[in-house]
Length: 247
Image 1 (cartoon, rainbow, N blue to C red):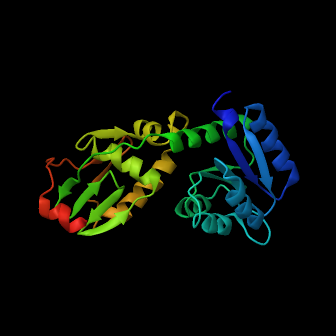
Image 2: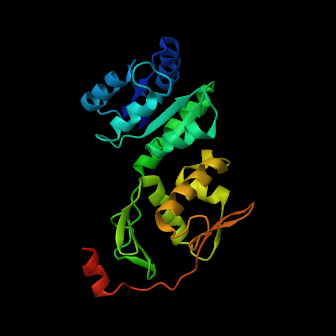
């Protein structure tokens, strides 16, 4: 039995035809598929069935996909792929900010959807790259990779899993330019190597959390047309006082 055959996907959409379309294509790939036609039903099924991934339509009556996602994130970290008929960046940004892992714009091909599902599941299965101590960037910034916490001017700021993976690769290649394709492949998967908009959004999220002035970055620099570079710093072990102060 393959890994996919063990995985359960919850499809949330009030359009019966869309549910049938998605179900058929996922089942052809060996996934087990359940469905919900409303946000409230989806929340119940997540609690009862514990799916491995949720495909969530944005445009639903009563409770739309954004509100459903917001409530879902209060109880679960299950990977979520949003379905939307709109291609506007605002919808993508809103979904990602609420905790979606990815988005697919209708109409989409079965191949694209299945590829995105498999990539999201691979990311969820990734072993956590960890370091045993704080990585001290400067007096204002340190990163505790073991706990996925950034210490910004003495205050802890928690990262979402994707933000954590992105920062991990940037910090561990500090001083070097990482191309868009390399970062997208390492953080999201090879299928995403051309999605520079997704990378730009998450660079913005990281800057908002760690930069004193996100519009004038001190740590994450844009190498126009190429990629991003994290500021070079002298790697050092944190002092006992710094570790104790963070505990």
